[in-house]
Amino acid sequence: MIDKENFLLKSYELGIIKFGEFTLKSGIQSPFYIDLRPLASSPSLLKELSELLLEEIQEPNYQLICGVPYAALPMATAMSLESEIPLIIKRKENKGYGTKKMLEGIFTVGQTCLLVEDVITSGKSLFETIEEVEREGLKVKDIVVVLDREQGGIELLNEKGYKVHKLFSIQNVIDILYKNNLLKEKEVLKIKDFLNGNSLAISKKPRLKYEEKKELQEHPVAKKLLSIAIEKKSNLIASLDVTQTSEILDLAKKIGDYVVAIKLHTDILTDFSVDYINELKSIAQEKNFLLFEDRKFGDIGNTQQLQFEQGVYKISDWADLITSHVIAGENSLNVFSENIGVVTIAEMSSKGTLTDVTYKQKAIQISEKNSKVIGCVAQSSLPDSLLLFTPGVNLDSKGDSKGQQFNTPEKVFREYYTDFIIVGRGIYKSANPVEEAQKYREEGWRSYEATL
Ligand code: S5P
Image (spheres, protein in one colour):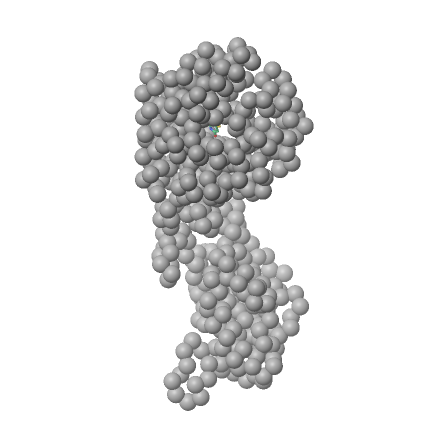
């Protein structure tokens, strides 16, 4: 048995996949380019490939093999030699003289033909080939492709009843290359964004407006947050990481008009009380912002439930939004109440964080499935169904000595299409928090509008 991963790594050395910025035939800007033709320059790899492709079809039921011109022709030939099943050749254009035949080779009506394709995107070339082959009275049941760009072609073919076998998907390729240190995390993210149809600078696809996001969201807290954003022309969440309740109340009164939410770490307060919470709630109501408890739950469901509902803080009684890790798996999120918006931590802002690409992808999967989750904290783009909250935002600093890394509002809107910026020290540590809050609100809104 040939090792698929090993085959891919050897093929990669031939330059079959390139990363950068490419304009495809369709005009789309793509962060990668695939050309499998160089495989024919390595007879040993072409032979391995033919064996791998033949192995993909568990129950062979075909009497002919045909490659989609041109890139798959050598592959189909090698498969024919390997399996001793005859080859037929489909022309790309007819000769314009003589027989005008589009299929060359010896075959009889009613025979079944296996089709071979190098890369499948929309499936257009395959559909053309199928049409020609079927017009000659042959049957097509199985199709084998080397690489699926995951842009819907296989689904279309399946719908029409063809069985498509693929050796690799682009996701597989990226995972293998990343695992073998041949791709950087940043490149992987760019490609995954592109594949999610969520590409930013790469495809120049405009971001969704808050109004459009509001339509997509089912959760009342998400809708509320977006309504406040639209009304106040603000995407600013101030993180008031101070230790006295009086400081929070004072700041909340002063900057409440400019923010959509105030984020809290209630467990750093030295003088927490129910009265304080009640007062904060009334300021929030008056100034129209939400209360966001950044508890970052990260335990088994049962413990999280106790931390959420019990103890001194009784978070479930007053928070509109909370943060939670997903480290304990999807069921650990079931303990939060329906009326609170859960924001999962998919990716952290600090240097050396363990939330790598794979972790983020898994966190997104969990978040997308759970109706309580309205979005994620992350440092790169998300699918449109999730709201993106980005901390690590500061206009004057690049980071601190404890691992925090800062970006400007402009950058996080332009590069990640964030929805909400979270600003802590940039506001509460400044000499004039009101002025700074106004500045971050304006800068955040301007940056959001610039990406529309
Ligand atoms: O990855 C993260 C996630 C969060 S929620 N990085 C973060 O910095 N945060 C929080 O955002 C952090 O706990 C703090 O409350 C705030 C950032 O504060 P700043 O002072 O660094 O702006």
